[in-house]
Image (cartoon, rainbow, N blue to C red; front, side, top):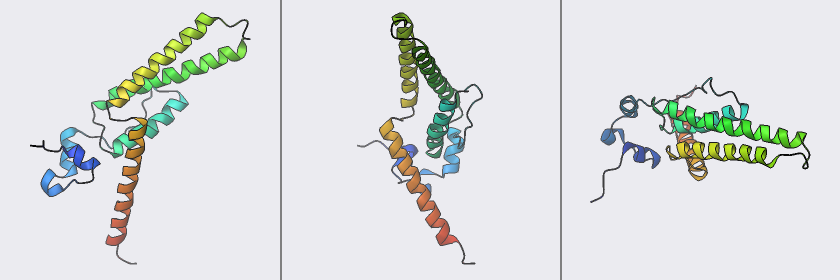
Length: 160
């Protein structure tokens, strides 16, 4: 016998029925779902802030972020910030030093830091079911839902 689908599965498959699975408001209260999360002040890198807005907005729109998840997401984006900052330092180092004067050990240390930060970020983000392919699917799903909502709003609106 197949196991019962979760509300999350129904939402992703667009098969959610409030009369059977309960209203989304009740679900959001139960799971303490957050619909909007501002970028934390601890993240200062411009690229990391842009990534936060892009990724977290998709996660929020698909009801994947609870209050408890915010700290985990912040940790992931701090790793991403370390990655961006270290890459910038490495690029500056390479730019300011010719190939003859560059120290291989310094470059290797930068690369290790970049690699570690990348792995840390990827591990945390995949906990939310978000890979590059999945993000594209989520964005498409959100766009479809928004289009349906706007169509519904137009049908309900009274002509002026």
